Length: 273
Image 1 (tube, rainbow, N blue to C red):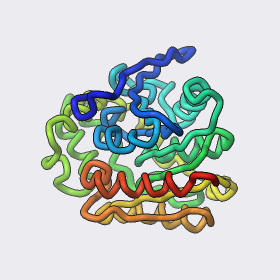
Image 2 (cartoon, rainbow, N blue to C red):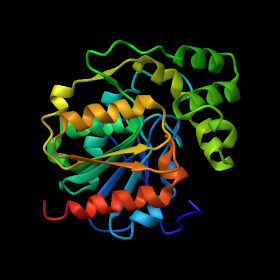
Image 3 (cartoon, helix red, strand yellow):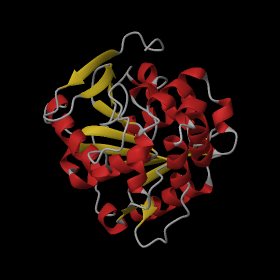
């Protein structure tokens, strides 16, 4: 990654699927979990800044670039990604709990990981989680139209439709070249992700988490994300919450300075806890 020449690209020999990741820095480990259509390249502005005090490890989840699925694959799921990361942490974290940061779909993976294996979570940071709440009526989905466009070979239109739906109208048009390349590399993961539509989270289970939690939202993010953060804030009495100004859903790219400062302050606050 040109933005952080000191970062090292590595591969973990998972029992049934290699896990590619990048890492930088030393100290307590911070695991970065990307969201839809992304991979470890998504964290290009976090690696150089946050690795000054921590060991940052950013994997590409199963099915994403550089080993991206090109057809629907049943091994692609929140549950599978959670299990993959639990094995990964136990290997790379030397048996010690780690700080976990997830964005968007990756925030659901992070939350499930902390709930399923609380002994692995030193702290939890959730940035604009996009999951459905338990008991909530299914929201109208745009996924089926995106999948149809992908199957018809309308890649650019499919991706612009998806990105604009989760970030706000006109977002795709404003995206820089490297981001569009990353998204196109992961386009067909949406064929597998389609099966996850309306997969919900049990807030009673979430409320039993004991680790420190930081909730992050973008000031200009679509309202759906704020409603997820509201529910999490109510369920998690130990949670703190920050809003990143001048940023929508992709807040760590739109305003990386504010995002990195918020994460760094939270991590510092967990020392000795």
